[in-house]
Image (cartoon, rainbow, N blue to C red; front, side, top):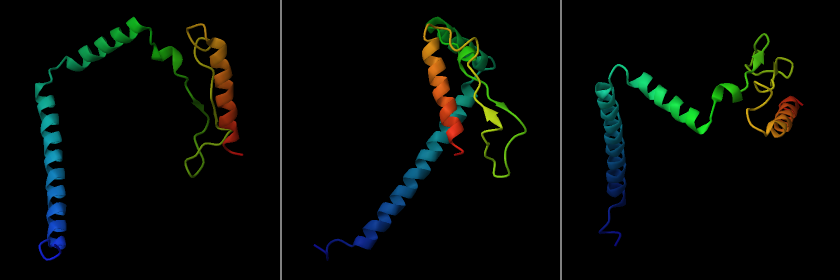
Length: 121
């Protein structure tokens, strides 16, 4: 069996096949992106955003009220990491959330703040 199968030649063929397969996948991806760009019309992005926001409004998802903003004071240290004194996790906008689970969010937010403060210790 060893005389019939030349392992180095088969390994080289497999490596060449894998290399050519990766090239083909990359070309296919590039061609797909180019076709998408060509077929895209001027107002498609705005129309897509409008449809997405309409669907999110229909199901009751509002990111502007639920994503907290992080206030940073004077940036970071020389390594790019924040210290516990430079950033605080603020409460969610409009008193937590827009639904009845505001107390659960407050306790979750308190837990998150506690874990954030413990990172430097």
